[in-house]
Length: 73
Image (cartoon, rainbow, N blue to C red; front, side, top):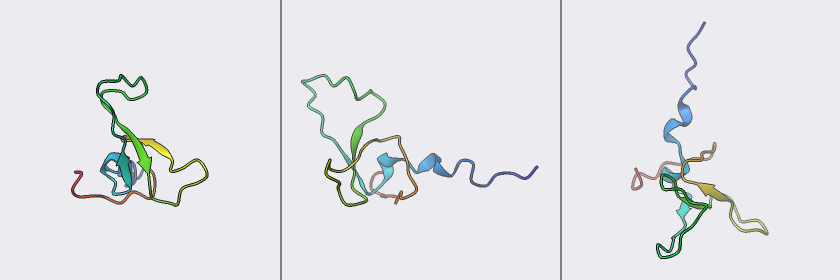
């Protein structure tokens, strides 16, 4: 059986390292039940916003439009 070259392709392509990801600023004085300690929440600004705004994503999500931001690595 051949080895799959694409098996771990998305491993480094997380929203947290993407140039289109804008992290939500969290007020530390108010607990946020949605955001866990190991991942942050933000907006993907890759495409134009819809009527509901930009899509909400977690920093450990990924998609096929990932473009690495070297300042976030």
